[in-house]
Structure formats: structure tokens, C-alpha cells
Image 1 (cartoon, helix red, strand yellow):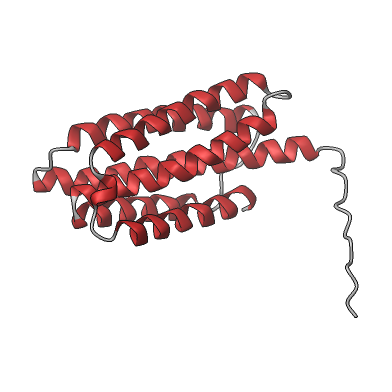
Image 2: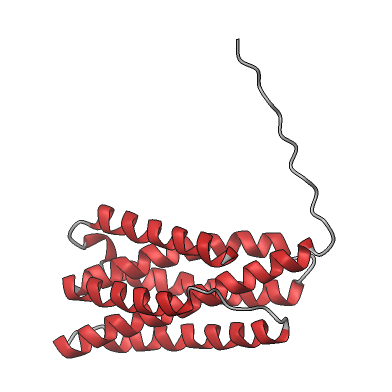
Length: 187
């Protein structure tokens, strides 16, 4: 005979809101940093190969750099440290971007589509979580999310789902993103 044990989740203590906000800012900073380096890796390969999408990647990288700069200012203003994995995310982002670009332009698009799909959902959850307590930050994150959706749509239009091995590639990239999110929030 098995008994069901009910575990009561403890109520957040004093400062829990500030701690959660620090996690949000830390993980968003890490994500935008990773995105900048993914696009840098893709551009490095595709510019060398004479790829047709280098200008598009440059534009998306510039938008991610704007998001990153805004989040860097928020980290400083709110006295939040970035993730300790920042150096790793630079290398991993560049490697992911370069590796997918080496496969093909469509694989680079598949990478963008997979990443932005995860990030859109991630931002949507954060926006819903903070919109009452932090309406200005929520509005800023809405703008970032809208840019991410545009990147995803551009990647889909570029043939992301036509990349060789798309289901496996997208699943692996999305899993890596979810792992990076979980780690970056806390560490």
C-alpha cells in the first residue's frame, strides 16, 4: 500500500522577489550573449564561404547586441552578477553557430529557429511573471521577444525545416538552450 506524500512548497521569504528578478536578468543576459556569439560563429563561416545570408545574420547579431547592452546596464543598475558560465557561453555560442553554418545555410537557419523558439517561450513566461511588479522591464522584454520572433520567422522563411536532419538538430539545440537557461539562472 503506497501513501501519497504532499510536500508543501515553502512561501517565498523576504527578498525572494529580488532574488527571482536577479535570476531573470542573469539568464536573459546569458541568452543574449549566447545569441550574439551564435551569430558571430555563423557569420565567420558563411562570410568565408560566400554565403547569401551573411547580411541577414549581421542584422540579427546587431539586434542581439542591443539587447545584450541593455541587459548589461540592468545588471549593473540592479547589482546583479552575470552567470559564472559567461566565458563558456561565448565559446559554446560561437561553436554552435560555426558548426551549424559549416553544415549548411539551412542548418544555420535551423539553429536560429530552434534557439528563438525556446527563447520566445522563455521570455513569454518571464513577462507574465513580472508584468505587474516590473511593468517597464516586462515591456522591454516584450520588445526583445518580438525581435526573437522576427528572427525565428526569418529562419523559417530561409528553409530552417528543410535542413538535413532538422528534427534531430532542432531537438539537440533546444535541449542545449534549456540546459543553459537552467544553469544560468542559478549559477
